[in-house]
Image 1 (tube, rainbow, N blue to C red):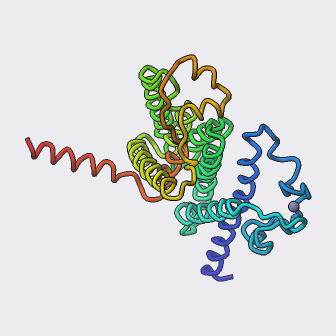
Image 2 (spheres, rainbow, N blue to C red):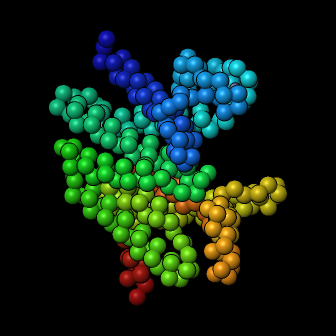
Image 3 (cartoon, protein in one colour):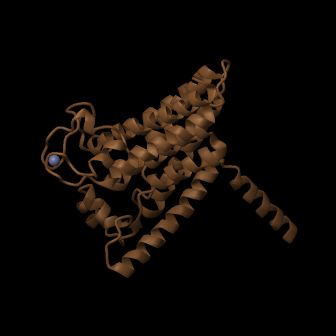
Length: 307
Ligand SMILES: [Zn+2]
C-alpha cells in the first residue's frame, strides 16, 4: 500500500472508530440518567424490545440501510441516533487529522495518545449535551472522569503540559463555584448548577485557563441567540419551546414543587447551559480561543483612545 492510500484508509478508520463510539454514546445518553447498565443488555428496539442484530448495528450505515426503522416492527428510530454517530465520526476524524497526521515515527505514539486523550473530551461533551438537554443535569460519571483523565493525560503526554491542565481545571471549577455562590445569594436558588461548574473544570483541564473567557463569552452569546430563535419560533408556530422552561417547571422536574411554594418567588426563565458550554469548548478546541483576547485588547485600546 502506498503512503497516500494508507493515510486515506487510516482516515476512514478514524471516522468509523468515532461513529462506533457515537453508537455507544447513544446507549449512554439513553441509559445513564435512568441508572441502567450501559453494557448489558445489548441494544434492543424501544418499541418491540427485539434485540438489534450485530449486522443491523453498524454505525451510520445501518440507519440508512434500514431507512431509520426497526427490522422487526418497522417502528421509526429517532434521526438523533444517526446524527450523534455521524457527529462523533467527524469529530474523531478531525482530531485524527490535527493530532496524528502527518505520520512520522517520532511523533506516532504521542500523536495517537493525544488523539485518544482528546476523544474522551469531545465524546464526553457530546454525551453531556444530549443528557443535559433532556434530563436537565450533567452526570458526574462523565464530567469528573473526564476532568481526571484530562489532567492525568496532560501530565503523561510528552507534548502536553500537566500544570496548565491542573491550573485550567482549578480556574474553571473555582470561577463557576464563585458564580454559583453569588447566584445563590442574589436569587436564593441554584441559578447555576454545580454540574456546570464540573463541566467548566473539565473544559479548563483540556483547554487551559486562557480558553475559559472565550468559552464563557461564546456560550452566553450562543445561548441568547438560541433562546431568541426558539422563542420567536414558538410564537410564530404556537409549538412550545423545549429549550427554555421556568424555575417552576424546573423544580417540578426534580420533584421539588414544595420548596418552590415555600419560598414564594417569581418564576424565572432557565435554559440548560451545559450544551452551550460544550459547543463553545468544541469551537475553542478546533478554531482557537484567542479571538476573545484580541477583542479585549481592541476594546481596551478604544477605551484608552477615547480618554
Ligand atoms: Zn422494533
